[in-house]
Image (cartoon, rainbow, N blue to C red; front, side):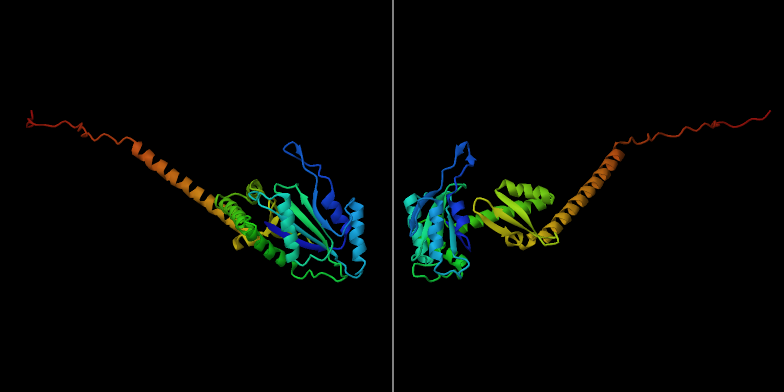
Length: 289
């Protein structure tokens, strides 16, 4: 179980997103429509009445720019969580985050590989006071870890670390094999990650980030390994390719030397016979006339 929290200014856009019909197809089947698990203090007749309910209450604090609280909770595929359990977990989490005294809407989605739900709440409470969003991201992470243990769910941290290890292994092995950057990124995509460049306004690439599509978690390359920051990765790729090219040339040189040595051993040695003396040998004495 893993959660993310953010705040915003418009209830209209987030309500449309949460309750829009899903027309995507997955394995030939139409995805299920969003399911409202629970709500409080709002008219759930249709999307427009929901927006109106949230906006009517926020009028109590018109100067609160970001009155929208949005938390998404995803479960591991090994977690078999029923709708009733999701509702219970959501309400438990809202209590932990201080959202028990305000309007809320809990919606279940099926548009990813893993079931998940969204909590939409009004930061303007029933008492007309603003609900603090201070450290909301950290609090959501901490409370999710607490509830994961309470409900016996899969620890998100363990799964995330496993996935990070998979990504690290693919990049490291790609560099060692002498692959180019584009080739390594194709291997990264094969294990369920996407990547994007972090660019300056001038268009200069300052880094690269990887998103685990199944988990919805994004990492900077340097968070996987400091050696894998974009600049260092490019340097490592170039250096390794140069090393492999040099080794290839050295191996080719050794092969040529071996071939020369082999050729020499195969040459026939000249025959070692005695030289014939063409001069006549006089074994007798010479007699004059």
